[in-house]
Image (cartoon, rainbow, N blue to C red; front, side, top):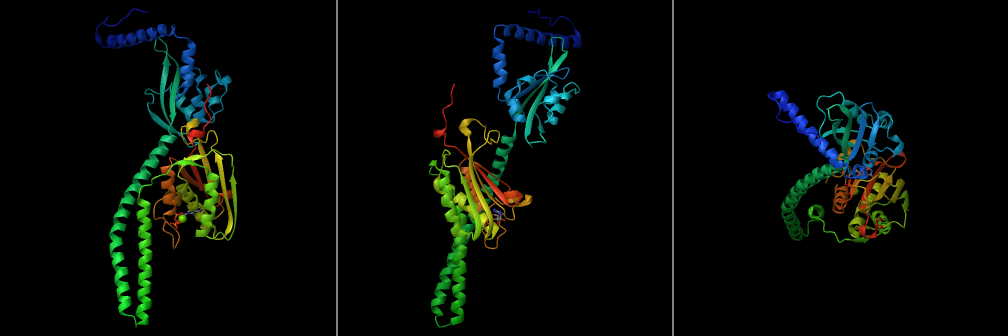
Length: 401
Ligand SMILES: Nc1ncnc2c1ncn2[C@@H]1O[C@H](COP(=O)(O)OP(=O)(O)OP(=O)(O)O)[C@@H](O)[C@H]1O
Ligand SMILES: [Mg+2]
């Protein structure tokens, strides 16, 4: 081990020099210790990090890139990449190349910074460091990073949940206050109808008042139902069966007319853990919306499949494997401004809609720890609602090794 040189001379310069000498000594000690641990340990350490790591040499070659880095950046793993120009290996992610290049130009290297990859839209959180030798000469640079997309999604979901909770509380309070006077109107109108038995005109008007009061009451009941927290009766649920049932139910609410409905439900798919009734309601609401959007003419396709590798919305490990159900139509679709709002309670573009259908859908998806989004539907037209639901962990294949 090198002798310690700290405290040998006076003044600031020396203080600084002594600190770096100490650091260097510690570094050397570290290096000496590494001799007792096989290189394999360090290779495995890097390979098994959950964070992505990319290291480059001063002359611009790739020194190492672990699997997490390849995965997060969507680049196929190739052992032969080591030693090649890093800009060449990372050409599909120019933002990363730019950050790595900055390592030898910037005075202050970014720490816990963020960038967005233009190709995939992924948010990446990263820290850049220089790799120096014992004399502080840069040998290369290392980028340690993490895919923040999932974190962003969770934050967005949290924000939405807060918004819904606030809206729900307000709706519950209003509904509660409105329920009593509505009941009063109905009772009084009933009494009046009895007293004015011989007045034909008054009878007709009072009947209308009672009918409208009943309708308003039904909406209030629906709102109160919506804001009540969901209690799931969880069991392994076979989704193809649920979707077939949902189709029949949706046809009762919204006549499909000449709509061509195709179900692509691979029957051998594993079950999900969930509440069959709630899931049936979820798909009924989505299908009823599709039928209503098409107005009796068009195409609806429901597809059920296991999440593709790389499509993972969860951490991606087998215990979080998801089933993805897509309900797509070729109707008028949803504009980008509407996409933000359609899941909010009471948002509706229909004269007789309550705007609770999709709010309930989102509530059920959330209760199942799933996820939902909407994008363009069939042939680039219409809407496609994608629902991710966690696969039943009991049916997962046992990991080998
Ligand atoms: N498949 C779809 N195609 C086009 N627009 C849709 C589709 N599904 C939903 N929307 C839009 O989202 C809005 C909200 O849907 P949601 O199901 O929450 O309420 P609603 O259908 O209007 O009323 P409710 O379901 O309560 O009877 C709809 O009014 C419609 O504008
Ligand atoms: Mg609806």
